[in-house]
Length: 401
Image 1 (cartoon, rainbow, N blue to C red):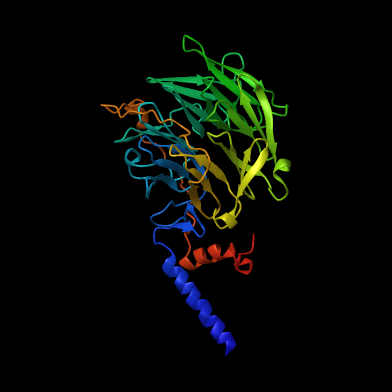
Image 2 (cartoon, rainbow, N blue to C red; image 1 turned 45 degrees about the vertical axis):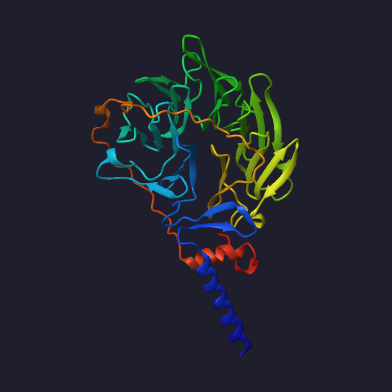
């Protein structure tokens, strides 16, 4: 009799949980209203595999995912591939990079080319006369220029209708074959480049608008092995790998900042970093988000503080409203309780009177279709409940594969 009673109570508890779950996939976590979480489902973001973020011209946040390009402006919308007409939608659902240029054109990168959306049409760029490799690694606006890092083919610049290729030639080009990520050092007006195996590089403009590249860290050196880079809103940039983080600026060069050993046991690896305007560094790890300031850990954001249903955090990003975005394997969310107050990135875009066309229309002729990945099913409401309960009731946690 007691067994049936406990089972009836458990079913009643589950039904109550189902009634409390919003239909849009959004929910605030118990005890921490500053955290807003979103599960992949209809009316929400559709994937937690985040490839890139960028700020939009009207305060929105665009998120490049493995299943579409999602936009958050208080509610979610997602763009997908249009296999019948690439000029009216994405050319692939797997988006690798996203960035706005100085004219409010939205640049969208894929593993097989680029699209530029001018507010009306999507223009496809996959002509190897313009892109020596169509595998887009990263996009970065630098004043009126758009810089495109491509797979195993150096880097490209687009400006005022002119494409310039900087080949992997140390004397007449970029000096590297493949970039992992790009970051703008706004204090020094320098483009910083992290590579997987070829060290760190900096691009500098001269008075006649010529751009030259110089290596700032050798591939075999300690800092040259830091294969990722993120902008520091206070100037310079953060270079990092799975175990170490260093800060670089033009005056001081590289300065070691923090390693996994400084964060304590159980951290696993460093997955991403984001600099705050108060000087804090927010470090996404396998064991939560560590807040580093004044040479010490000042806070740790974990599932026990409402940051999702798992401690593994893959990405972090500050938007123009100073919300700290993060992604775990189960949710995407943002946090409004950081100590940084000023906007991290100033969005200076203007809607053009006549939408410009960055490439000739002839480049858009008959592109080949790119296979899109099979989306991961969102799961039933019961799956979401079990994930939620796993943060509080260990026996309900699913087995790790």
